[in-house]
Image 1 (cartoon, helix red, strand yellow):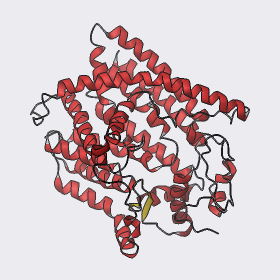
Image 2: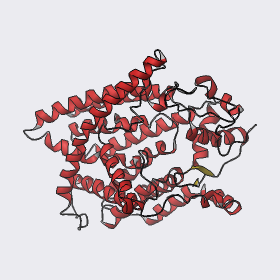
Image 3: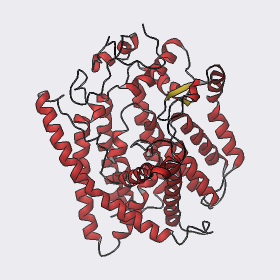
Image 4: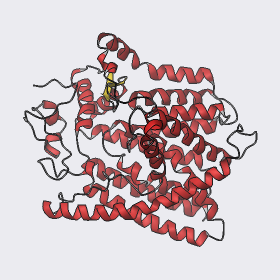
Length: 458
């Protein structure tokens, strides 16, 4: 495959993925996590009040810092619609892919660049999280900055890459607790000589990103419950029970496959046909998809086996002077995996599907590099046949997601199958100003309903 042929395919896949994501943004739904985020943004846009802490965390307590209030509130100042912040999420995904493609293009062959477009840009895991409002969905750009800054500094430390690296880590801390996966990878990669650090740049970037933490610290002095509620689980739970650790490792493999979460294939096509028929058809299609797509797990399993057979001999060595770019990428993926094992082992809660998405860019590297080698061997015809089948399965899945996946369907809000929208205790102007009730109404005035944690009831 020539550079020109690869470029054409990459552009075609990019346009296709972008169109699907735009369609999904238009269909994105609002549940509890989205209402909590929208409440913070709406209070900033409507009342000028900045909430200094983020959404409730899985371990209890609230996420530190008010960066989510800005990420949600600023778009709402431009467009008063619940999908306005989701447009920013999609923009972050576009920038992330652009940065990864630009960073890896000098290293990857034309065919491997196509593999990157399929395994990252058309990745159903990434695409599913590209078009609704949620904390983890912002992290893809920060992950891409992490890889770029490490690779840029593999031979010598530089101010701006280190500045952006520190900025990305501290912003990720305020967006979602899974920043620990990037932090662990950073520490291991630096200790093993995979990149250099310009410490003034790193510290300055971290300090700048930490400024939104100042109001949080002041509020924390007034209300310690912001963090003292964080008492769920215990450190080392993954080592004691093993299942949380194994579940996290399985997600590492699943991110570079089509074995998506049950929530993704929990289809209901009732928005486009008779509700009962749509629910039955969706359940049948989802059950078949879940079984067939799980077969693709064999590919990342073999790819990671290949990676560790090559890397285990070098695991005790620092990155050598004059080492190749491909060896560097293998080490980046391997050390990111080792860092993930440490974090999964210490995590106080069981790893959920979204809690390791910050490493999706690293999880796909073994399969890209392994497949890139195979297409230069006599096995190339078989690999290319598998590629065609994989792309066809990907396209089919991507066409189904906006039609009936959990976050992209309105059916069920009034008690249908697996209702996503929450019944709320009362009404509020925010629900109407942001067009929530006009696009997919939530049940209101339910005494046993739910309410966003920072929004005053009226």
